[in-house]
Length: 257
Length: 361
Image (cartoon, rainbow over all chains, first blue to last red; front, side, top):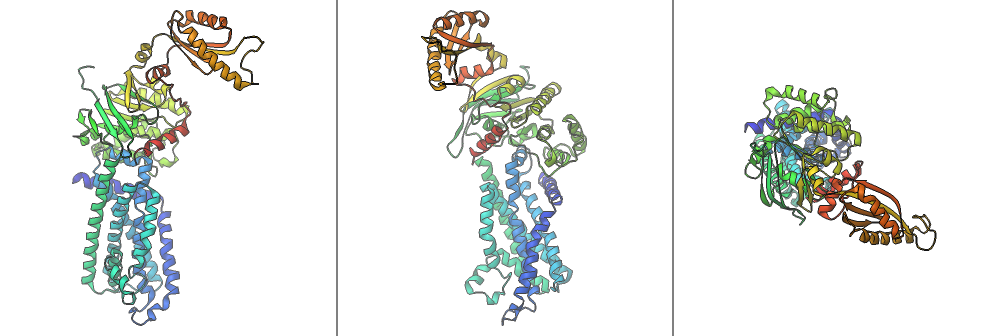
């Protein structure tokens, strides 16, 4: 356990250092959410007038959705780092040391979660500048960061697991493109639940992205804290399952090569 | 030496990859402490697989191996604590500085945290990277990166160091410098080094003992001079021209080179047959328009060979004599010449690493 904690700390430091040396990537990943908030937010400004939408302003409705969407996409790319390490021989070099194997995954998952938290702060601030209000105050703000980080952690674990199994950038890119947008649109990120077709609403209930979106929106409005807590627990479960899956992938990698 | 335990012992290692490629079919050898042992062979012979098994990265399908006294299957953690592993692909983190790479490796290798800064400093000096220590590795040259690799492999003061194709892709000057470092390493520390290479020259210069690997098995093992001495005699090579029958033709002229080449090849075969029964000739074969004869005494045999060829009506254009080389050893044991990659084989190196990776999808 001590080895796990120490190794995770050292490896996390390595990942954070790499990110800080290439801060341009944080900026690049923020371009999309900014476009969603400014252009999409303006374009669909009047959908809130549809009877039954049930929200006062669309930017208010959209901001938590974009925060979670960025968490999803940002962390889904996390597996690219493992593929780079595999190609560079870094992974083999580390596997020939006594490093705790689970720490290799947990450091990446923690790194993804921290990156999501930083990005969420920036997107929330941008949404607020455009007129969104965090009625939930500081607790609401922090809970949104937590929800985004949990989703990011789970997604990053899955992405790392997939990277270890396929060991190919192309496959990872294809899978993210295949699942990314459906996961986003099968949620209430852009459209109120009551206005969704029945089958989408049914699917969205099983979608961790949707759990995070609904709970973030409630936290932002400072309402339904019970539901928020339940969503956070479900997301924590999602993280555990994902981390377990990706540790299995590690085992597969070790026997396949 | 015989009282010390062996640094590496492996017996009958076997490995077949999932795609059906049989990489090893029974590899056995032993390496003593303080010795540089080389595995020499062409790409795909099974050298990298052997190293990966000994470094606990790959599980063998059969056979046994122990490294620094720990069994690779029963006690991989024990092996990992006692080895240094420098892979074919560099393995350094290019977005970190040299010092950061070493510090992380030291922690992962369980160096006591209090010792880390001093050990890292000493190693950086040892590989002559002190000045570049705080630069990002991405800015390093190929040789600097390789020296950092070497330092990282030594950070835990290992009992056994694995070097998988350490000089592939390096320019000749950098390669020579790395050879110097490795010889210095053997002088200063009593560690065993297992090195794989596909350069004959490297195996000859660097290894105390070596084994030639071919098609997943070891064909011969010994010190470079032993191996060469086992092939007795000298090698004489004669380049021959056209037969002096009838006309005044002389030498392989550019015009009609094709028919000329065919004719001289036949000639060479015929001449080799002619030389074989001569006194003092151990072996004779033809290669293009060249006759290669292994003889007991090169200096005395040469005139007799030339006379015999000339008397048969064939011109000798040039002649060379050499002591047996590792290339001859290789030819002798595998029946073919070493697929010669010259020292400037950087593109070969890239293709090679790609190929080896392709074997284990």
